[in-house]
Length: 301
Image (tube, rainbow, N blue to C red; front, top):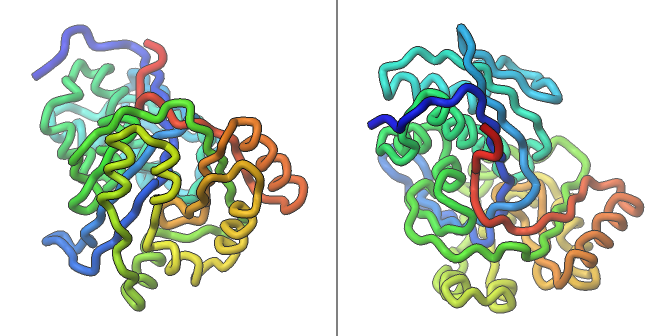
């Protein structure tokens, strides 16, 4: 099914995410992926993805990527989307990067979701078509989340939407990433397999979100992949200990497979003060963000 009136230029915001809950199971699905329970929230930190008509498919990033564009998630999403609808993948996709890589903030998945959304508008496709959902899931486990909304619980491999919640829009969140190469998801999962960690309680997190209770949520956030990532990059533990000692921090947790950690803060001023201290005292990358009202969204066309 096609929507009316394809667009000539589409700009999409591609927000970062944090995992308020991440529960990795030891069992795997038929694809070989771990079963995962994930609660994610979109943030005000975002890449910007611009999609325009072109004679061929081209993906460029600013700053420039150090790998071929064919490996970019947005490129792979464009090829898969075109194949799903019997189209030629002709477009120029420009990605202005702000979300750090290998941080557990979902940057590549957000970019893929934004590219899919922009291409649907450019090519006159219905973003709600089940073929679009299938493409999103094929590109990466987090991609469907960014198409669905700002605050959601997903299971399966972390790619099956189960429940949406009223966004905690405006809730202050500070992000801190230590120096270093970061942690790849593959390496973190491999380390987890060597020493699987018990699943933290999920239902209390969902109950707090259903009640729209940020204070209760702060007491229940959890990530059982964190020990594996911290074993690979001990500096993550250092960041978490430091964050938990800062004024105004209600909870601190590693996001995804790391290496970025986040803290839920009492106020945006607290978050900004933590950013200044992280940068000045430790030389860490840091950003004061808020939770968003939506996932990937068109901001100009």
